[in-house]
Image 1 (cartoon, chains in turn red, green):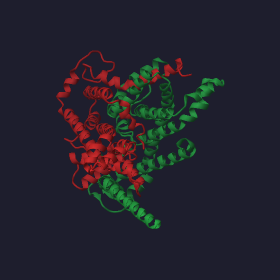
Image 2 (tube, helix red, strand yellow):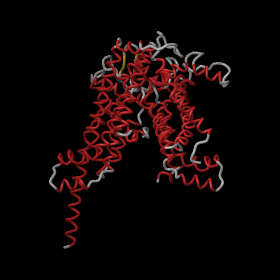
Image 3 (cartoon, each protein chain N blue to C red):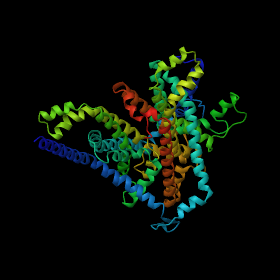
Image 4 (cartoon, rainbow over the protein chains, first blue to last red):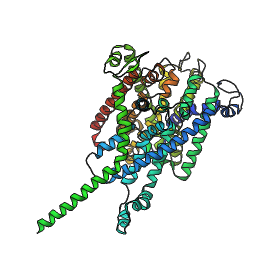
Length: 268
Length: 302
């Protein structure tokens, strides 16, 4: 009973093919020599990859996405690490309510968040800027940063901390030399998951981005709305290649299951 | 004497407790202020916005009227749009459950090497932009002679080409693909708690494979399927990119309609009302079904 029968394996094969098909198709079409989207493609050409260079908006958007993801995940951790330590260690009134508030961006549809942030930033005269975008992303990725840090802080052995205190370590030394190194794996996972969330977000960002602060998903989405040509497939293929490389490196040096563990239930 | 020591002890604990509470609030204060300032206040402003007036030339007027809500309640266009949104989300949820649960079960029975490879293949798409994945479906759907239609017709499954682009069918197929990893992951997590010995016991007692799946596996993974279903449903009902690309400009769902009102029509109050209604409906549905599941499977969560 522990092995799969032929029926199960057929089902599995079809399932995997369907899961991969759209991604493979995007990558195949990216190599078309034609000036339009053709499937199946007749030849092989890199012209649409070279075309990316003539469309600097995509390259710029890629750097915006990268910077925004790295920075917003970092800033989110600056807020999330102390909060996670407090929630993990102290029993105080309002703790559950606080935790619920901090995880609430997971529950709120991103279209609602986008609208709320657009309304807010417009009324305080900060719409379209990078700072507004950054603050919005910090809030949206905060639950991911918090949850993984919280998991690490909850499972931490506190006797090392007590030893440090008994040896006369001050609060800051204690945090920097003992607590932070112990929860670091959780913090790193939190940063990685937060980065992925920020890098992939379209629905919220599309409300806030202005020309110049457009992220890659937003630029791709707006491009597809106006014209469909192979350029957007070659951009997609490049992003897929970069993602895969990052994944393989991450898996090699860190272990993918450790990072993905926190993504198991994004709903709540 | 001993009473005095007890009181002193209690005082020490009380001050320690008070210090803990102070420390806890000091540590959470920055995040709390961030959330109040940049999440609670903007959401409250959006709720207020939905009661404001709007006109083509006068713009947004900060008054308190029920115009937008009345329009949504009375104009059948909105009822149809919300019904479509939730119909698509429900169908997507059913499809992911129907295919994702068996797949998770099959995956779980593979050897560790294959298991981790295929888990990566199925979860990997989560990291690829939704725009790219949806674009792939748009390419596969094509027109009448798209690849999907050619394949289905050569298999004899359909007689004439189906329309996928700009239809709900296409939206459901593409959304099911986008949401599938969440369902597989959720069922997978439930399967990790299933003791394989129970299956062996049933086998040794003479149960056939179908009986085992129906009587042993299904009841145990049902909480996983249901919590996956809640995730998939709420994400599908608020999905934006896939409905926008596959549905085009005419076939609207709640998220794309709100987007249109905000960035094309510029009727922000109406868009805010649509978004708030979506949020409230989703919260009610999610909280309601969560409660139902927890009551039904109370013993599983202990």
